Length: 446
Image 1: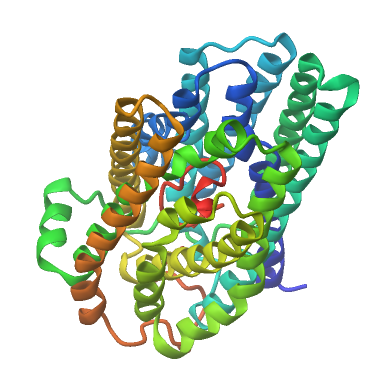
Image 2: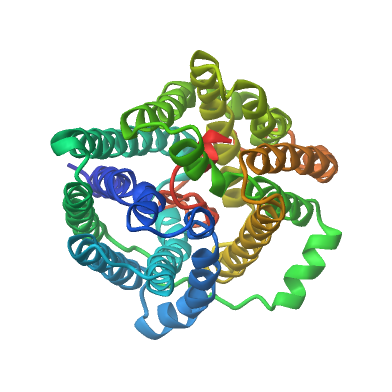
């Protein structure tokens, strides 16, 4: 097997193991927070505020990569460190005790490790995947990752449903089930780190790697089409997070869904992503990722408010989840490919580190706005419906930023092009799309 094939195969295996961790562990952290007795608002904010803390922690990434002289060493180290977060959660589940500050601190370390490694990973992987196969490989890898995330999510949902059913819903048994799941997530991340370590690093650090000052990035936001695109992505994140963190407590507390039904709803969105990604990838190749982004940006605007009309009709909710999975799959594929194409390798780790912080700030701002409105309405059922509608309104307003950005981008920047050797010109994320994604699966519900 050639070195290229080995690297691609190990990247697929690394992604599969990391996605299993996401599905079986990360996506159930909000549910675990509820299970240990924290408030619904805490369950909503734990998918946002710790991400900002993590984004601040990950600012050390460029300096750390330079000190180590290697993106690979930093990425593998971050993956190993991230795995130990689940040991802490497993202990909390076994003891049945987790305070709010401890929960938020653990989540902050989780996201700090994930984002610090992710920005460096995007630079590293671009040297391993030739440009001529990049869209095809990442589209296939995305399907693979979504499949393993969904598998982990379903396994965890079935496990928790069984624990909920046995012994009349004994609370200690449910917490022990969470402990088992977090133990599996710990092991999965270590497997992921192993496969990361098996990949080569043809360009440890670009010879002209440099830090991009924040002031220069701000000028790009105002003056360049690419900057306007980034501005749209950040604002769309804020608008989405007004509602996204609150879908899990809405389903589990207000709708009184059991873990099995909750898992089935979220898995439906995952399945829709998996089956739609081949079509979405071909659309990006033919028409350009900018058109895909515009189409999905328009389609995602009404998603949250649709819950106001569909929450009492389970078939309608499943249909909405199918649509949501397709739209968000296309949105993430298009945004990550566009960013990949437009950030120079020498600037990539620095720019993505700052971008992660901006995105996390927008995420927290949106969630705090949603939380403030929710609390002002008495943390009531109607409060949920209002923030869902507000999120859709704000998403619609952000489209005005996307239109000029999409119109000024190249028509089809993602065509396959001949490439010699490594693809050290460009980039990609999530689990590693290039942005601070919300914890869990709430965005798929929105």
